Image 1 (tube, rainbow, N blue to C red):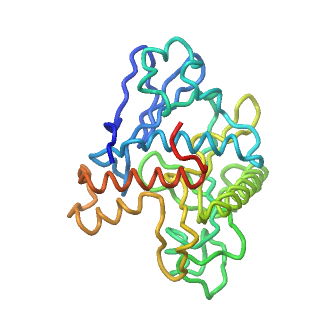
Image 2: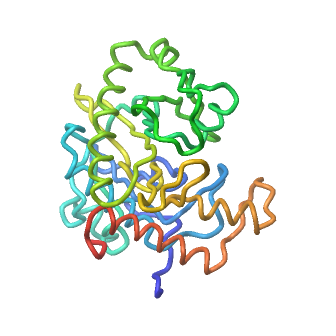
Length: 300
């Protein structure tokens, strides 16, 4: 595969950088925000020494697809993803930003990760093994790893600036932010998950779990940030689904497996670079997720 160079960092003259996250660089833009999805990839709480070419474009294109497709989500913070419509300050950087940026309304972010799980995996599976619960919610006793849950569940977590987010119970989230708000986020997140899972199923994919972020914009509660991408969600190929163990997926598990089995890394910074064959295969996985979910052969 002939891949372009990975974009691992941006520095946009004339625009003030507000935050550099694990993947996204966020700039001030005339009262709005410019969100730029880089090709950085993180694992075990560290940004790796290699980027994944086209990853930022996949994350942006999938988010735009879902924002345009979902009806249960209601409004969102997107202003435009057309670089030519983002304003004069952006134009000197148009070539870099095209396909990997969004101009969005500035939101007061609600500091809760709204996780919805339809299947038993990840930290939910680990808690279930030890306690028979997920985020304090009791589940049937006969489930195995990757089991489909009787119904999707809302399992919030506290947003962390660094390190792992902390799972909390619904009751704990209500104590922190009020029952009315958390109940609304639960209901809206579950509705979006169900709609997305139905569409994914039509495309031969299982939506195992995902996380949403919500914010307030001018008194309106809207969906923000990335939506239903391989970075924020676990998608499994339905024709390979076999409960009782981990499933092949389109997220970063391929990279994590290499890091744990072959890299010799002790999971302390600095993180290592990835070999070329791992980089190329990871790009292929991100592109495969995009093509399957959207039904489109190529990125915009």
